[in-house]
Structures are given as structure tokens and as C-alpha cells.
Image (cartoon, rainbow, N blue to C red; front, side, top):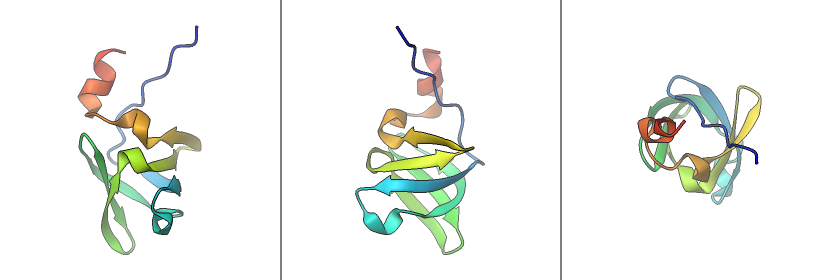
Length: 81
């Protein structure tokens, strides 16, 4: 049985949106300045953007992540690791 790797802290990391329910977000990139239970707050060249985790797939450090797998706070995600 394969154990799913827990995603570490993402605040301060650069991400790029690969897919989204909102097509205007696809290709958006920036630095994560805050993470809440359901949102990622991103600083882009156009300003601060709030992304709903359940609606995005993003790339960070060359790897693809599903936002819906990140729902919850960082400390809650790693508690079971």
C-alpha cells in the first residue's frame, strides 16, 4: 500500500496554477504569502490573489499538487505524518 506524502509548509514558496475551475487563474504564478484552511493567498505581479484550494491544481518545485488534497491547515496536514 502506497502512503500519500504530506505536503509541507508552502508559505514563502512560488507556485503556478496549472488547472482551475476558474479558467482565468490558469497560468497565474506568484509567491504564497498566507495559507488558511480553504485558501492560498498569492502575491502576483498584479497584486494579492486569493485562491480556493479545492478549485486549483498547481506546480511547486517542479511537482504537481491537487489543492483539494491540501484542504485544512498546515499543522493539521502534518499532524498525522
